[in-house]
Amino acid sequence: MTHRPILNELVIINVSTKRLLAFSFVFLLLTTTTQGAVTLTFDNDLEGFSGNGTHVVLGMEGVMKVETGGGWAANAVSMDMSPAFAAEWDAAVANGGTLSYDVTIIDSEQTTSAFPGWFESALIFNGPWNQENENLLLELAAGGTQTKTVVLSVANGVSTSSSDGLIHGDGTPGTRQLMLGANTDGGAVSGVTLYFDNVTISAVAIPEPSSLALLGMGGIALVGRRRRS
Image (spheres, rainbow, N blue to C red):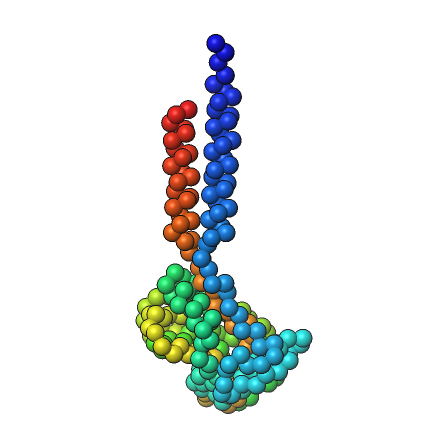
């Protein structure tokens, strides 16, 4: 009787196992549940925002220009979240994610009587209310321009902090409002102009249960074949 070498059998098992695991991982990637990031680009309009905002072109890009007075003006513009934005927001609250935006400041467009003690952009999520400020470094003497990308992690819960790098929500159903504006030293600043762009909500992708089950089956098959070998 002719026996197949044990080495060849192990090679066959190893190749088959690799194929099974490769298929499992590919299937997992293809069936991952995700809404996909939702971005407000302001290419053609204000994307539903209202208040002290106008649609302008800065450089080659459409942006939202926000003009307001000094002091607290974090709610200069606001919008009710669209269904797509709200769905991605709810997913980010439940599973983790980020809320980000680009803000541009042209120093010569700010009205100041002295160098301000603070000059911040501000974002508010209302539902429940949660404000997060981001410091912007002015260079009034140099007349500079800066664009900053602000990235906030979405957290589940309620918070009154405005400087922890988190934007909170508790999944409460109903109207969800997003607000943008400024928070500045009112004793030194009487006029603020900011340009907002690329407001983006992005939730962490969570695999579907069927995908996890298939991946687990692949792991079980791997263990079983190793024991038989």
